[in-house]
Length: 284
Image (cartoon, rainbow, N blue to C red; front, side):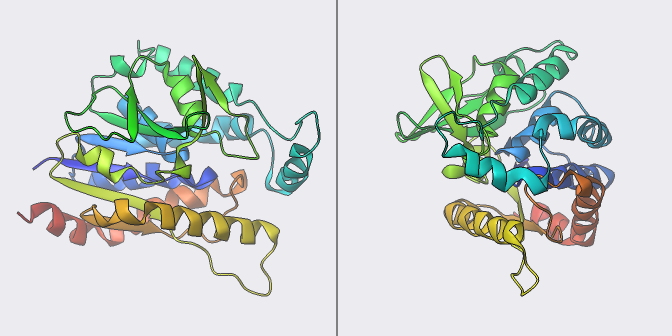
């Protein structure tokens, strides 16, 4: 039985996916294909490059502030700056691209097509064409007329493209394309993982936090993002065999202070549901 996993976007909360993978490995559950959007793609990319979940955790701890380049308190000032003529509210995202190209090169890999560990699928959206693209090392036999596939792209460029969150990062230029965050059309790429010949697909997403009288603007923004992502991902999630939903206790999109807790949330939630996951895997 071939099992694949699809990891949703979610800003800094994406480190929870490393906790999920750690729990699956400790429980003897083997993943044979992986997909991810935005921060989920960063974890998926590291995984297929051969980095362990513990490696991912330490890399995020070391490099998170460099990648994000701002804290939770400054995101709204940057969004405000977006509407100025100089667009200083945008970050270009070179840090993500350079870091992941370096990490890939340390494993002797440069482009997505050179990855051999397992199939990987990473969505991004070309805002010029209004079309979804999938960066992958294995173009599936079953293709959609509404999607296009690219393999010959540097790993850092692909991960930067899928992580280019609107109003925070500039669109990512590659050849004739201008890419933005894949979550705009495909926040949990279940179908693309299934197309890689997987019999079962585990989807991992994040629970939208409740809004209370004490909620701040960032809480409301995260709630909006989660609801939008859930609606977009609804059809994809229906195609999964099990949905693992991680609660991350009001972690902001760029809240690097909660890396430790998010990693633990992913691990602990998976371990609590591991018997259910095993049952689903064993079903024919």
